[in-house]
Length: 163
Image (cartoon, rainbow, N blue to C red; front, side, top):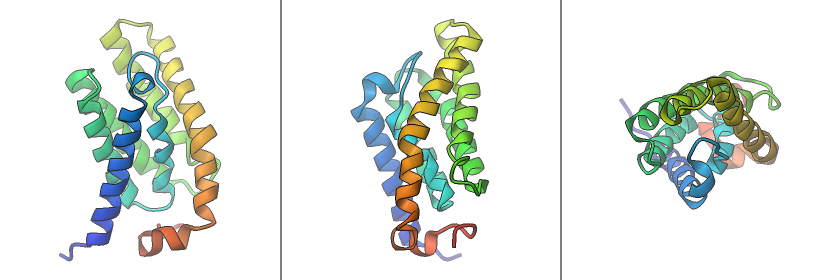
């Protein structure tokens, strides 16, 4: 099995950017109502599967610092992994931000509802709104920006769907 150092480094770069953005904007990244700016990067699997692992690891690290304990580390990070894998399969730029919005609204919303004893529907709604705003206001323009430069930025890591 060949180890691809470029892919490992690219995944590590995504993980570090996700973590840095989450911690930089910590006051709005955690809690019952959140606008996690780093979630704009959740569109990156649209271009490359390498981003799936980078986002997952970045989310794990971010959630370790988040204060919601093992529930967030486990379920929040698995939600990011599932959303990233689903985003990789999406072929429409306009729909690529949708899996993280929906999956996080359901999973993270349910988890926060339990942790903070909030109404389940309202918790899912507030997480979904936060995700929608971040992913469609920041993430969608990021897709269009990166799409114009995709071969230069992603090179051989570019998804088979985007070549």
